Length: 333
Image (tube, rainbow, N blue to C red; front, side):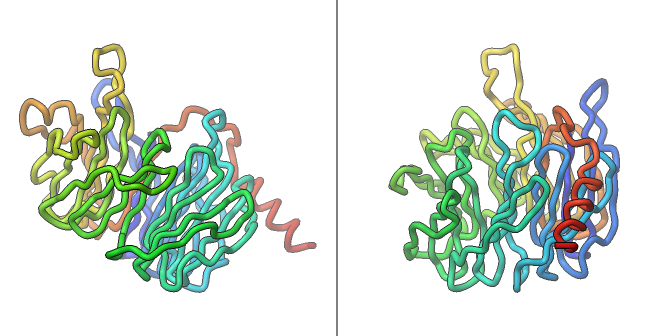
């Protein structure tokens, strides 16, 4: 399992999580990959990407722990990144990126060719999420609006104003519902018609969420807690209080338990904070007592985002070579 984090200080951080015997976070790489602040990261299989305030997307080959290329199709800071990976594949098929210029870029991730740029919002894109089918995406923007993108036709198919600006949008694990975050409020909606299902009210501003199986949603933010919400009732299932010394900026659900009555319950969750610390938790312990992190790493930087993946197989052992060859071919043409 791999964790990738970005920071205000333009550094990208990569760690390999090993859970056999005693859990460890092994450093893979750390270097200043952008010219300024890293705003978002995404990981799928053996590839990771980061978006920065320098209007650039950087691409990383996790199998070689190296940076292998850049994408320069936005005219504003890159604020959101998301991969689409079909269930049958270990390598992503598409990458979507959102920017402060209000556009969403659609890329073929095999190997990273720009397909189209779609104007989603009049102002910046705050966040985006891709449906499990890979046919549509949702975005929320700084213009206090919500948009749906038809990824088959490559155009915006729906747009509406919101009562208040949303900072986060995420599909659930099954794709039947999606979540939107506005300050302290998290709302759940039906994917088919955006009908409001329920609202969850946190005490302080929510800065990150991670949907999990069996109706759970993990959130973190200004309260420094990691909260597991029961999305059937809208109430708190359990909470790790004071998980970090400062606000939580990223949460990733890493694994799920097996061989027990609650086999669908995720138990390894990673979190990152602006205090520079990345921690991995066995959240099952939160139901019984105040848990201690299984393992942690201190980057000594102000972290802004976190992404993670479990690498099952590297279908393309060195994506860097393939990407460089493709970029050269495009340049020659």
